[in-house]
Image 1 (tube, rainbow, N blue to C red):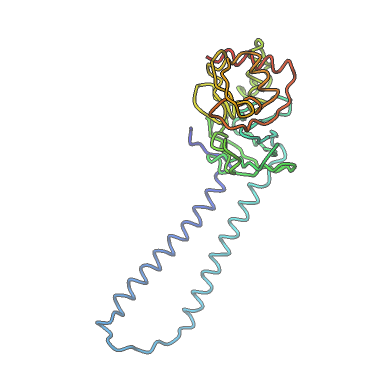
Image 2 (tube, rainbow, N blue to C red):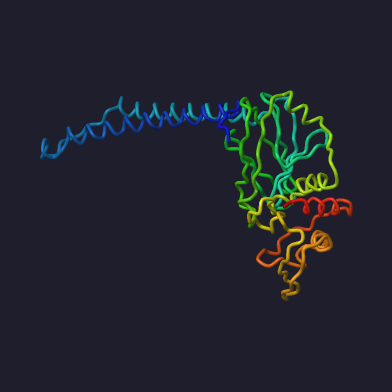
Length: 300
């Protein structure tokens, strides 16, 4: 991941370092004063207690100065918070759908992707929601995080000023596949972004199936490289012998086109042994199922 920055990131960092700087200065002042008092007023030098008189100016100082510092931190934080919660009017919008356990990004022209692609140095407003439980979209490189709530729309924005690839996480525990709910932000030069944005999808049935797998969230639970996730990996799945559990009874099957199609239509009926019965019911057209099966057959 490229550790770049964004305009909104700078605002968060400014507030953070301002508060940290004040805390460090106060720590040093208090520590030095404490050490000085320990040395000057230790029992060896002053075996008998002495009367301590009040000091009006000292009481005024330690009341007024902390008040000013606290108010300055509040003001600094509020101004910067207002900035990062007020997206520019010309910001491009991307709709974000969180679901167990993947992200879907939908653009104004209807294009969809499981990876967020944005143009360089252009403000981007993300409109967030969820199709199931509460998720939380977090892009640590840009210091932005916001909950995705079912039946509700939330938002955040950023302006990436360094091209590169940045991690996206879900930071709200959302079920057994929470740790796999990952994606990327790809910040592209404007020309490259527009070329991608305007490009039409091409390819055969398997390519269509791959696109469907991304859009429907299949790749949030099923890997394509053989690694274990919530569901069985697509890699080498077609034609493989598996033990499935049906109505509590185990049986051996060969994962063919018919089995995959039935598995998609009726999830959690035939459960591949070793995996939890948690596949959500997702509506697929017959043509989509056919394309998805063709795609799975190509993942070797």
